[in-house]
Image (cartoon, rainbow, N blue to C red; front, side, top):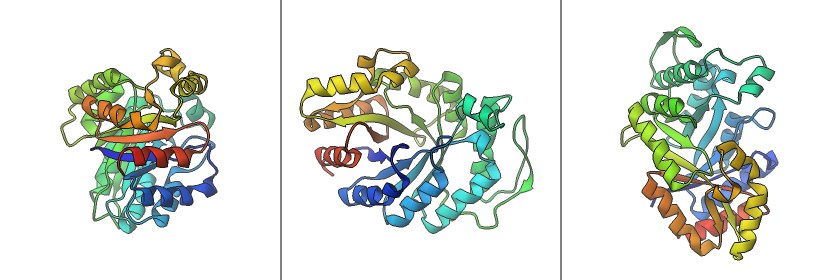
Amino acid sequence: MPRIGVMFDRDRAPEELTGFATALEEAGADDLWVVEDLGWTGGVSAAALALAATSRLRVGIGIAPAPLRSPMLYAMEIANLARVHPGRVVAGLGHGVRDWMRQVGVAPKSPLAMLEESVTAVRGLLRGETVTLDGREVHLDGVRLVHPPEVVPPVVTGVIREKSLELSGRSADGTILVEGLSPDRLVEAIGHLRRGGAGPEHEVIGFTFLHVDEDAERAARTAAAELTGQAGFLGIAPEEVFGLLGPAEDIPAKVEALVEAGVDTVILRPFGDDHLGQSLAALKALGR
């Protein structure tokens, strides 16, 4: 059985987060993942709230935009959380949405270099190393953390395209694969991670949509209406967007399909009404 977690959707009110986290922990979830998108909420502060409200749940930041987060500052923030909550933090980094990065004046000349150099720097700092890096995008001169974490948290990326997947495979501790990918497309993406150098210790984290409805036809209609944007983003028809959509009893088989494709950790992204209720129903169906 893989690790099973749930995403706290960016559109949920921040004051709902702590109650959501405690309910998931009580229901047996392994992970809670928070979002950092421009204008919504800060990923580090959201992670801090969720960690403080729980005692066992692993909390992932999925994902902080590398151009917006100085590697030194991000390492300082993550180290704080990891010192207080050892073994319960995952630090996610990504390219950031290009237009959003332009809006705030931090769009890099080379997104690939920015991400790889940031991952390399943050990982080194969290290991307690003194880091000097004169890269294309990241410049650090002999910096170190005074209080590095005793349990070093994994640094993962959230990436989509081939070159970025290969980058993640060679430089990160794990990779978040975007929601909506079918098992076949997950196999293809994981192949790029392996070509980049990812070994068996590289955690493959698959985000997947969740909408529990005992009426399968109604669930399909809801998904077609709500997932059109993601379908366009992935370049597929809405009905081809993969997810745990329909009766709860179908969820274990679909999770098993993700595991067979190579996913180590499955993160549910509920949509529609009652995100917590859907998450609890899915966890129950999975025997949690």
